[in-house]
Length: 449
Image (cartoon, rainbow, N blue to C red; front, side):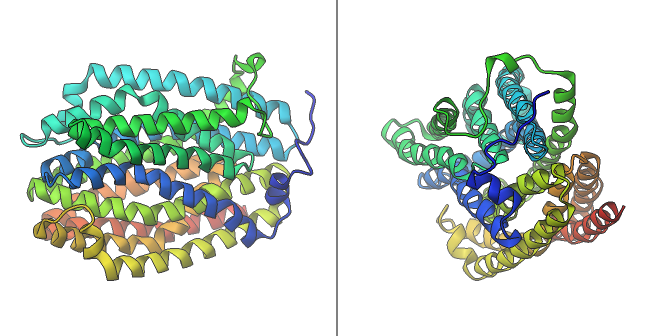
């Protein structure tokens, strides 16, 4: 197989291979975090404009429907993470042909998976709505939102996956262009569909799908116009067994992480419903705000992964470890600053979504509790990302499995039973503190070995 270094003089390759570790982490991570902030506005914008209707049941319905979006992203993450890891390692080893073959296969898998998700979700829609925990006052609104989100699965999943594929070759700026355009479209269309056309929550879902469609098309244009280092090709449409194994070997654990998070989110919502449907609205607002902090550590981890994968493929272990250390330090320091902002301005932040005094009080209490995860999650995320970048997803999957299935959900149920609502909201910080110690210990042992 012909091997050559793709664009060795390109500034994107310099960032992956030679730039100072801390600067490389910031250079790859900050634009991605900015893009992720913009991306999370998809759901925040829906929540904000629906909150302007002063209907807390529709506000709760958006929160109940959120796991459906997370499931779509989980499946996208399977293809995006698996393909990105293989692309970065292939480029590091100088194998451009394999990198482009992997890229093309990822495009095809994205289309196929989106069609399967839409068909299965719409076929079992009624059962899905019940499973999300919707009650009498929120069932209709949840159905209206979910139905549209499922129908537009191709755009949501395409937008997410194509952004990951652009980042795998170091084209971070290109990847966030789609996010920016998509979010701007969503912001413009939300008030139009919700208020001007009187479509309420269904209009918010339509605006979200159209925003994702715009973002996906922008990402595609960079490939079609030859702005990228790699290009999809018709001659690579048929996947090889090796490429499929590599994609799923790394991608399935990454996907299961988001799926297990979705399952835990549903369990959390069902417990919250026991304290009243307005509590679901309060927790939803707090979680949306917390997600901004989450995107910081996720952005730095996702931005660091191509650097780690490239240098692992190139056999440069020293640089790989230096980048990992820089990533942990940069992420942890930033998250502490975010935590301080949340603690001081919690009522004002929750008040952006509702004028209900009860929802603001409960939401502020939740936010000031769950924000305690932020000092710990950076190290957990960087550890998991390192295993994925090295092509060792079994360890990343182990962290995910223990974190969500064997630790968080049991703690959620136990602390809720013993301490009530206060125990339920403290389950996540306790989980993350334990997982930080466990994941760092595991990563240290694997690297030494």
